[in-house]
Image 1 (cartoon, helix red, strand yellow):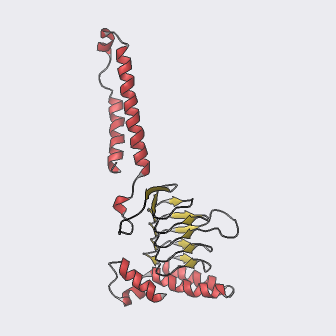
Image 2 (cartoon, one colour; image 1 turned 30 degrees about the horizontal axis):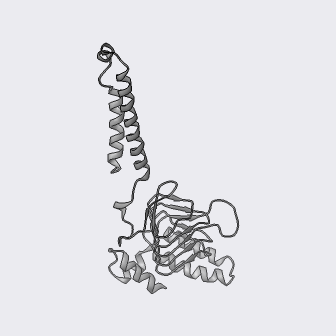
Image 3 (cartoon, one colour; image 1 turned 180 degrees about the vertical axis):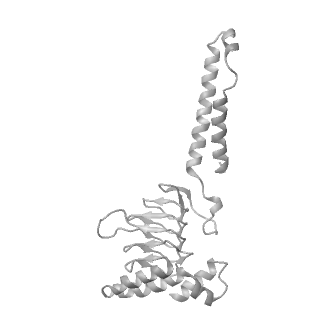
Length: 241
């Protein structure tokens, strides 16, 4: 498993230059080594020691993995500071997890209470995947997202709460930061365009009911409306919508 983890790091991280640097300077790899030992002791029923190893690993690497968590082969925790993986979490083969990710529970329920990640899943920085939910294979979870429901395979999830924004992931790029949609901004744009259309219709109806004298008295521009429209346009332009 160590060789598989090393090979995965060299395949996915262009900053990895030699095996010595990776072995001693990559906290994600070190946390996995600690976890493999702690998990083995946990499975054979050794008390206290697995949790102590997990605690030492968190102190040294900034990554907390409960000894009961099941981690597949070729998993890469990139940077990793602040990553938390709960007791009943399952992480599939070749998953890529960035810093600040939480695979946690949602309450004090017993049994399976943490998420299950499929193979080749990418979890962006700061994302929270909570509860006993199923994340399918080849799913990409955008940075900062909060996922609370099952996610089908081959999809991209972004937002709070997480929503599926793309089906059938086909790009070879692992995370595709430049292609992750801003769903909230798209909805705001749609509502904004609808409001503008309704305002235009209202103005036309209003004009048709006024006499020529009343039309001359009507103000041609509304500065407040122009200012608010400009603010909304700036927001949407900043989101690339």
